Every structure is written in C-alpha cells, then in structure tokens.
Length: 199
Length: 231
Image 1 (cartoon, each protein chain N blue to C red):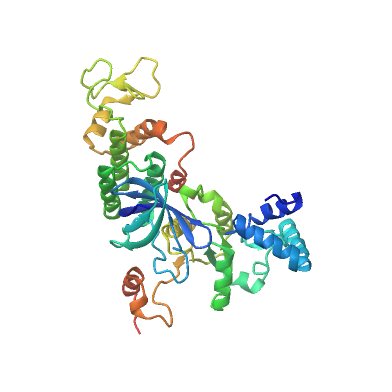
Image 2: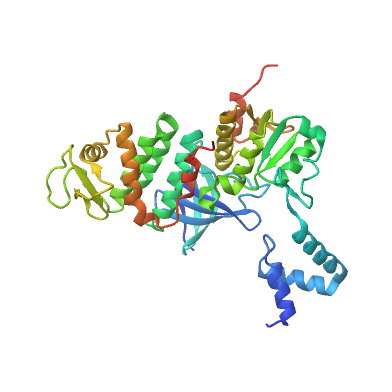
C-alpha cells in the first residue's frame, strides 16, 4: 500500500534507529500520528537540538554540548591524576554509578577492530597520546571490555604509556557479587583462580 | 531446511539487530561461512559471549542460502591465550582470511594450518616467522606456489650471490642492470628453506606483501596499523 509522501518520509527516517525495521517503523509512525502528536513534536525538537549541539568533549571525547564535559571541568577530579580509559559513554555511566572512581576519563568511542575498519586513529589515539604527554596523568586505568578487541586496545595503550613512563593498571576480573560459582563461565572462573588475592 | 553442525573459529562478529551478531567464521567442513548468531548478545542467553575469536566452536546452523542461521553453540576449548603482539598477529591473520577465503569452499588443510598458527603465536616468542609461514602457505594454497630455488625464466638454480627481480604470477628472474628493487639470491633461498635470519624475515615480509597484493586488493589491511609504534 502507498502512503502519502510525508508519512513515507517519516517511516523511512524512523528506520535509522537501531533495531528498527520497516514494520516497526510503520507501527511507530502511526502510533505517533494517532496517539501522541505532542510527544512526537517534543521528540523532534529534542532530536534536532541534540544533533545540532552535542559534540565531543575536547579532552575526553565524551558527548557534551560544552567545550569541556562536566567531569573534565571538575578541578578535584583533574587533581587526582587518574585517567580511566573506556570504550563508550555507557561505560562512563556504569563506572560513575559504582561511586568508586573520582578521576577523569578518556572515551575511545569504539575499540581496535581492524575488520570493522577501526584502527588507532579512529579511536582517538593521537589525542590520548597528546593528553598523556602533557604530564598531568599519574596512572592510566584500562577499563576496555574483556573481548579480544578490548584486550588489543588495552595492549596498544599500555605500549603508549610505557614509552611515556606512566603506570598502567587493568580492571580486575572475577566472580560477580551475588553470583554462584556453577553459573560462572569457565574462562572467568579460571581467571579468578589465577588472580586470587590473600585475605 | 538443511540443518547441520560445523566446527569453526569466528573470524569476525558484528552486532546485528538488538541482540544478534553477524558472524564470519572459518569452518572445518565448509571453509568460510556467514551466519546470524541469534540472540547471542541477549542478557539471558546462555550462548552469550560465544562469538569470541580464537576459540573453536561447534555450532548448529540452518539454511540453504549464503547467510545461515546459527542456534546452539558450544566452545570446544578455551580461547587460545594470545596477548600483546601475538594478538595483533592473530587479528592480522583473521583480516587476511576474511579477504582471501572464497565463500563456502572447504579448505581443510587451511583450517588446520590456521589452528596451528594460532597455537604457535600463543607459544613462540618470535611472531614474525609464524606470520611469514602463514602467508607462504596461503600463497601456495591459492595457486601462487612460487619457486624459490630456480629462475622462473632460465630454470637455472638461484645463485646466492646474484640478484633477481620478482614478477607477479611468474616468480624470480635474473635482475636486469637497471633493476631497483631486486632480491638477493641468498635471501630467496632462505625464504624457500624457511631459514629465518633477521634479513631473510625482512625480505620475506616485502615479498609476501607483493605476492599477496592481487588477492588482497587495493584497500590497505587495517591490522597493519596496529604494528606501528604509538611513540
């Protein structure tokens, strides 16, 4: 069935959302038109404003509409000399929710993945190198994911830090709190045994 | 719909829709395969994480087309313990295989050689000889079995002290007086014998780049950037 040009354009545009195919886009378009035009107008304005004004923080690459994000502007955090390297903005949120870290971040916006066309320059390595060379970092904490690509990224940054004589640490791995041993996969359990600590 | 089990290594996995992954694998039975690993990134999926590279998986596939559907997957051993430069090398091998392997053409010797290469990379302190031997094996299996012991034109034995030009699809021929990038016979023989001195490795790297270039195409391999020192 043919829809009017504006409805067609709306359906096509909604398909740029992750996980939204033709059917879902059609359902969303009609739901907004029939039931929630106010919400749709608000969504449209929010999308426009965010796409126009949100950019990357000049020092950590996280999303912000300022030149520097809120975390990078915090003088106490800057004074800590700690820099935690993560793959995505969602990782920053997860670490912030833990309440354990009060240093600064560097957000790679990806990981080294040659087959996806992502090399060192695509994940901001020149900017990280510049930041480390400036001398305000006393320790780099690697919080990339424990996947092969995450490990390759961690190794690349470790080599960079070695050249600058900056200590590097990696997040520990082990059994989750509240987890039962029989539910933990054998690789994680094996790693937990290898890195067990004295009490 | 056809349903069967395959043993394979994941060469590349990329997220697909909300919780699935689009996987390119190297299987014992079919060579290079592509399938959708359904729900593999779902929170409650017991197959979560089963798209990691360098682990041998047994996976149930279904479908007759080029893109299969993957269901139950089981790791047949722990991931090969690759770290540092060895991990970069293994990622390079994966990128080369994704480019070179034809779709669904069984390549059992290639599968075993890849498996052996990963194990060597994990154990051996020098990764470079392992990579060069992997590339030389691929060249031979792709139908470019260059002769390192005889001149491709005259059929005379390669002389260690003489210089030779490399001609794609032909091999090594005695260099002309104007030749600028000739190979020394001594190094060509060392490549043929896989007798790796630092100089032979350097020359072999240059040779395999030239010889593999028609198969790899014009787009540079991204994994090569990993080997460039950050500082």
